[in-house]
Length: 375
Image (tube, rainbow, N blue to C red; front, side):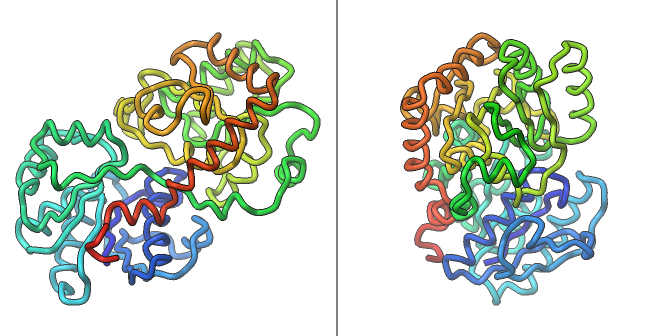
């Protein structure tokens, strides 16, 4: 298997996490994997940084620092690389639409395209229309039903579509660390209730709502783990303006260390708004599949999340989470208060989420996508 990936590495973005975790999972299932990446700083240990085992080969190709140029050039170079090594692998898996276009339309390489967002411009639409019916496009996977429906409406043959939500490494959360021990390890208050959010803090992630929630629940500490410094500074200023002092930003945390913060929490929150975005500003409330969602479930802590369509594909109100109205401070306040006040109810939700997430490991995602093609 060749995986063609072109994420921005060492940036805190979810795309790089996804690529490394998928390669790790394929290797765990006995598949020989070669990951093609744009060139990166070899002074950093990529396996250690992303918390994956060095069980697959990484090959780097020349690249540009500019994100768009990196994606395009890596797709082109990877296509030629795999063309000349075509006999050494069974198929290619990629999130790179340029690679998919060249590999299927020109080089006859058996390819699976793994889509995580809609087509971004007219060029992407033309590329998609060129390869969607190709016999060399073996499958077309999406990370949510909502996204799959978007591509079906664009003419993707239904028989090619596989819906495979993102996943989680369960072993990262089964480390025998109690809530109290986790708090000690990350330096959080051992006595106060803690509500935690992890991940990027792009527009629409609900951080401004969470600041207003913290103003209503001053006896609780709110911890935001991750985010770009520019975004964090903006929200820090907002919290200061509103005199909210029970709000903590950790700044960037390596993904391998995020689990300790989640395990230290009393409640895990996803306050997404109805206009939540992914990197680049694309509104994603109907199709996203947040990695944090599955990590929250694996943490066995009560989850309070807004009921946007993408979240409701995985979480069910009063079964494995409390789902609240998007864009509403009062709904978030009431949801958090409820799972804290009704301890047994919160524990039941957390346990059910932990049971449910076993269907969403990275290995299970690989099985859904590859099916009988390789396994």
